[in-house]
Length: 107
Image 1 (spheres, rainbow, N blue to C red):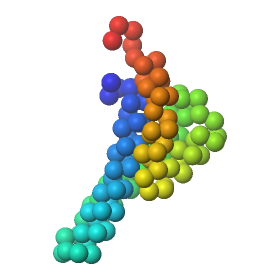
Image 2: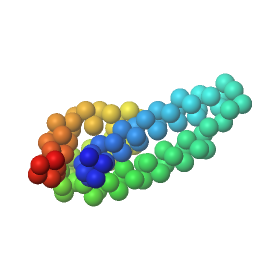
Image 3: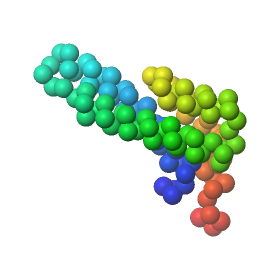
């Protein structure tokens, strides 16, 4: 399952979305109400996941037969807070179909 590029893309979409939520909640909020400053480590994690998501989107678009419009929506969703979750939900069935198609026979 982990070797499946569509599965990895789905998980990366969710990880990037959650990293942004963690950055906003724990990084920004906690730094304002306490002495705990998690902005730098959470920001670095989120930044790395964001870059990976952009690259992965550009690499997987052919496998999923995405046109320019869907690819653009995927890239915009990587920037807008909470939008990766919406995109993941919107494309859920297509992701599952592509994952099953990529499974080796007999697996």
